[in-house]
Length: 235
Image (tube, one colour):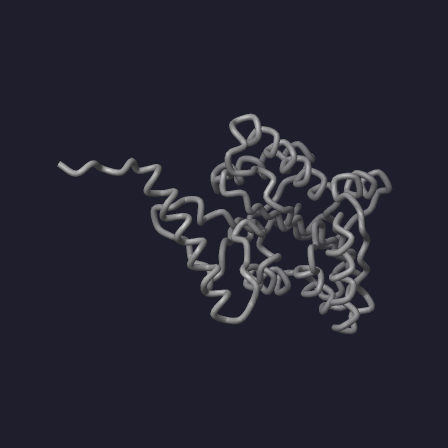
């Protein structure tokens, strides 16, 4: 009888093929290959989430976009007319975000290069408050990192959401994103719930979004459901 391939090996092979298909699609469009692990706003798949968030944000909202990369969420928010602060630790990314703001004539968007964890703590210490806070970090739970790596990533995610909740004005929006395939939707719910509770805030869940229609999940391969964009109204 022919041997049966173990299910985990089938999943891994299918996931690799799924990633290669996305690279091939990018090549046919003449663009550079896009790494699947990039987060919601980082690879264009966040556009539906950005537009949904912008429709919920009040006009003139003061906003913070942490881990802005090239400015996806910040640019969308700045079009609403309010002051927007975008931060990223990578100097090249920060410069690209600033260039994008200039190109779009968005003088109300300011870009700062710095560590988001440190800056969020500093903002909280100064009593800063924002109408919209967006947290879109790179994947903190790497594949193959083992149980300890997942635990460490969960703590880091929780700190980000906790700080974000404290920085959000009552009635404001907190957008919490994760692109870690090892963090399931149920786990992301748990991380966000614990963080918001420990921040001393309550929240309404306005939406739980994932990848756009141009990047559909592959049924039976949970790793392809790695994009998670949860939008809360902080009370």
